Length: 235
Image 1 (cartoon, helix red, strand yellow):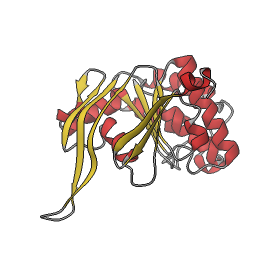
Image 2 (image 1 turned 120 degrees about the vertical axis):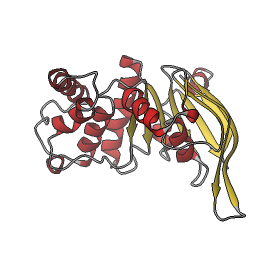
Image 3 (image 1 turned 135 degrees about the vertical axis):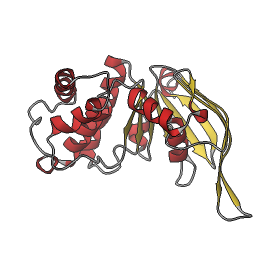
Image 4 (image 1 turned 60 degrees about the vertical axis):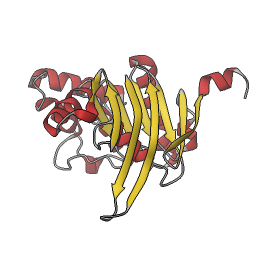
């Protein structure tokens, strides 16, 4: 599903100074995996996520997503790929305040030729039911709690049937109860829908719910552990 080959990311701080964020990283993520990426602040977690999701370009290396090397795509091609194949969830929900939950979930589909208004509405209703908000479809964001708003954002990210769902600190702005609801939702999406999920998180409890935990230090993979194997071994 996702394959990174010798990816390097550098920033030009000035004419003569370059900062290396990711020195040389190779990584494979399989279809249906639920992967948590952890690490201290400044370790390159979000940069890595944005490179995998096509929101940033590596300085060098290959980034394969669903059989396409997105590192070589121009912005028009990346817009198409993001609309068709990628769902993104951020720490803040970025819902449009003047529209209902149903409208917010429908919007990505209304600009996608794969969906007409009728099918977009039906799918948005199904997704809001999946995230436990069937009774809040006509509520605007101001009428929803923080956790409910984030669940609407998750439903929206799934609207165009993405092959992979990326999350950048998706529970970082939630209280513990709402965060637990989001943990359960991600596990449901992964187990019942076989959704490929890659999240960046500081939340160790959330990270432990994933199948696989990749820990970054200074842009390098410090550890890569399949959590279910550890649990079976009794560690």
